Image (tube, rainbow, N blue to C red; front, side, top):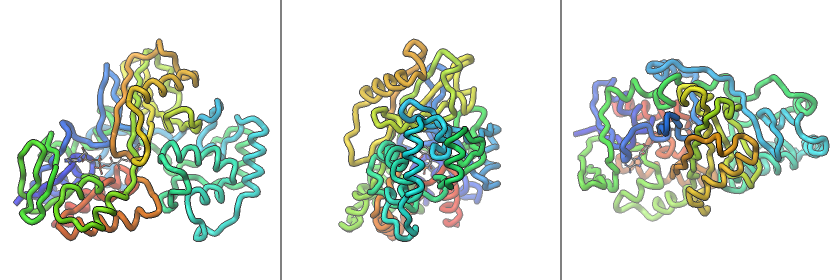
Length: 424
Ligand SMILES: Cc1cc2nc3c(=O)[nH]c(=O)nc-3n(C[C@H](O)[C@H](O)[C@H](O)COP(=O)(O)OP(=O)(O)OC[C@H]3O[C@@H](n4cnc5c(N)ncnc54)[C@H](O)[C@@H]3O)c2cc1C
């Protein structure tokens, strides 16, 4: 009886690698023709683009050593920027208000001083959390707008446990200092963002991918947990002894028979974002000036833009540079057509003065159905209902969309490893 793993993203690859390390064979079945999932990349005209920004910042020495095995990692200080109404503010914006007009600074600082005071336990949603941390004016003009662009929902529809240390809460002294002059101090939640010198982000996994078996173009479409069989879209099937799946919870429930109604309903109520990547390669080395930056203006589609060529020069031909813009939509909203997104994004980035259309050598748009999970107020109840059910029918669900959690790559890797070790 086989160990069967569904999905060759980092979680599935880690599960197969750690089973192998413990003397157990497995086969990973992947619906696409290549491995890596969200850690994957694509190359166009000599430019390599990851799927979204991707750095690693794990401090776990075992995971770090695996990630470094295939390619040494470059270490970037996490210095990023913010674009707001034509002004560039160092990140985090609330600590670096110096470039803004005086009137705007006064509104932000007065509202910060008069911000609502509430105990954390009394805060009902993310909108309230933001106002309590930053004051109304900043909250409404920066993170509220960013939330609509990145999470595709209104901030009052999000809960707050996911925030953790992801956002810096400043003191009045910090805000005042940053309103007079640009600050050197970095308030990011990690000291370094690491990225492979060669091969794009997924090369952190090369040493794990080599010893394992992956069957490509094998899209699981149904699973019979009584006969322990997975059926694929090409008509083939495989019997399993153990089944580990990194397929999104919203998809796997539809592959099973006799699922209780409350589980189906919980899976349908899980919310997520999908994302477009607009990837651009330029004939000039100086287009990319920021490792990444955030855009708050709601008439500009991307919430974030990063530079693959600054992550590693190996991602672009000599004397060239590249950018990739990320545009997200919730699964409850209308998703525009790719060409509309591409043209509007390029037009707005040109208006921002980042480049001219003559500088562009490569222009591409592609879509990922699953990007982020959305932390609406029912997420914990719904995902528990689904995961408990999968456990009860003998399916071990792993990874970002298998656990339905805000996992970084090292966490998805650890989750795959834990599942493999749990199985003995
Ligand atoms: C915008 C964005 C930025 C990010 N930035 C970072 C970052 O800077 N640093 C960081 O550490 N993490 C980052 N992450 C998170 C990181 O990408 C994920 O945690 C990680 O890649 C998830 O891996 P996974 O294996 O769980 O899922 P996935 O990568 O989604 O893998 C699942 C695999 O299952 C396959 N599959 C799906 N359905 C089927 C089916 N029916 N049959 C067979 N196969 C199937 C998919 O094709 C895919 O290959 C970012 C994520 C996003 C969206």
